[in-house]
Image (cartoon, rainbow, N blue to C red; front, top):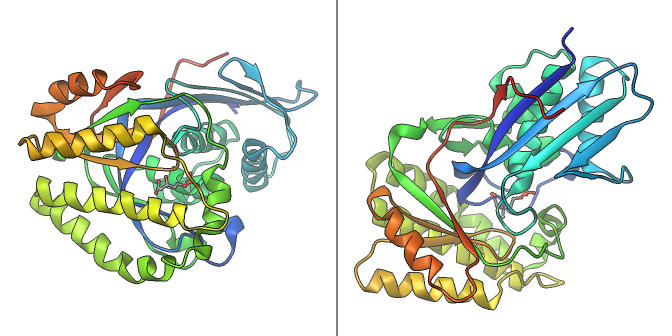
Length: 328
Ligand code: PMV
């Protein structure tokens, strides 16, 4: 058995978001389905090796050794060990090419890469659906970084029915996500904790009652390639998510002055005739969605905003894949 494997996985941006979990939080079954696009330039690369020669487990993340106490990566490796029926120690080396813990969904790319490299190194042979189910248990949004392109995480009530599927391949539509990095400071409350607070917002029941309709609308606009309609929908969805954050107990405030400045500029550019929309997740870094023909201009405009440290242009991308070059 070749017990070493490396995978590269993209992060993804949710057009319609996963926020809040139902029932068993350990299985990470979401309150609603969600729709996302995989991002070509926000990537995690992970090498996993199981070996009888290792005395302990080790995890290196961006060049630093990680503590193993209450470590979610190790919990995920335990899931993989259990499935493979092994108890061999592991060495994991993982690297992100973008900021971690700032709202760019590094846990999505991270757990997708870990799942595929880990399963391969453990000798498991899984289908795409099984990879997605397994990745979901590490971090919900990771299940959407498994399939290619534009992806739907199906609203299943059980572990077997809660997985992601590709709606369209990456070359289906030239939509671009220009990420504006406003600060590399890590957020105080990670989304894994934030999910448990969703129910405390008085607005959450209203949100829940509208989710099925939102998913159908998003699918309709994707199918018909209606950029303006899609943009309006995803921007409103991001603002709704932040309304839930702000009104949870305790409240979750992720927006920085720089983030708000970008939001205001995007609205201004739009009123000046540039079709551009923002979306954001649990953090201060912001995604600006436009068509490919406007991507360069949007990146240039963003760079000029006070507080924007850098921009990263992302095209729709394929999902996770195994690669030959190991990190160790
Ligand atoms: O998968 P998690 O626990 O990192 O949660 C993701 C939550 C959002 O990014 C806010 C929304 C989403 O669907 O990606």
